[in-house]
Image (cartoon, rainbow, N blue to C red):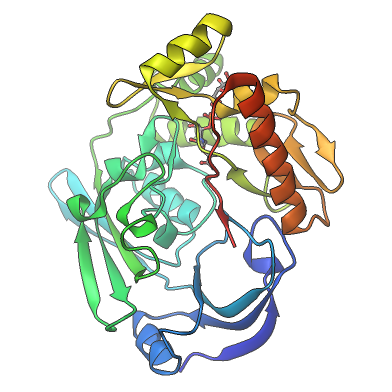
Length: 338
Ligand code: EPU
């Protein structure tokens, strides 16, 4: 039976290193523990927060409810010709899974090297980096239904993936807890280096025919050069999403700011680089009290040591206002606020 703890500091459990408290806390190591936990709590009145690596959240106050930390382990695989289905427990650290797959020469996850967080959180916001999103390798996942205690399987089409979006953030928010994820990987590598920075880094290292281990290595090098390491400086990766706007709005913006960094997006829309917009407003590397933006990537907000969640949140409001005033573009947070 899992052990409930009272009045626990969440500082070790969120990569922003915000020192909020949870009224109750329980760690889950097996899928079957979930049933035991929900038999012991009032699932309708108790506020519940499911925590993986805590790498995409900002606590602005103490949490008056039950935090369920998912630590379900295990990686296994089944080979079928060139295809490999890899299954990982929701509590597996994302980069441990990537390392396992790169080591076994199972291609598909290498561009997602060093993304913080756990496997269970990966489908929720359809994690992505360097030209690949989780949805490109996702096969299915299993999840515990809080209301009934049943385990349900979700296929690709059930998940409604979008840019940092899925059904678990929308229609089914708070209803299911992901317990494991199945990935379709391949023993014949298709190297995806179309993202400019990867090609440039491979070229710089004079790697002409990259293996998936090479791609993983250069992605790690790029991330380390741009992004702060959460083990030394609190942060949650990109704080905002890159805004997606329609053509008409883009034309107005482009006429005024022809240097605006942008990419084509589905449905004839345009995605803007939020980091560029924020930098242009003078925020790159700015320090305000204990918070600020990262010196090499303005899209990342950091905790310089003792920031409160509210302080970080207020700073993010300042950024939203500045970007709106200068560009008439709305920034939306990628990080979940509690
Ligand atoms: N840029 C600036 N100034 C900055 C930051 C960026 O001008 O301070 C411009 C540059 O032109 C740069 C472009 O923005 O070339 C894009 O920057 P980058 O390659 O760093 O990517 P991003 O769009 O800022 C997204 C993801 C990251 C992911 C990278 C690489 C989102 C919200 N973020 O960032 O994901 O690692 O692409 O694929 O989509 C995360 O979600 O937490 C995350 C880190």
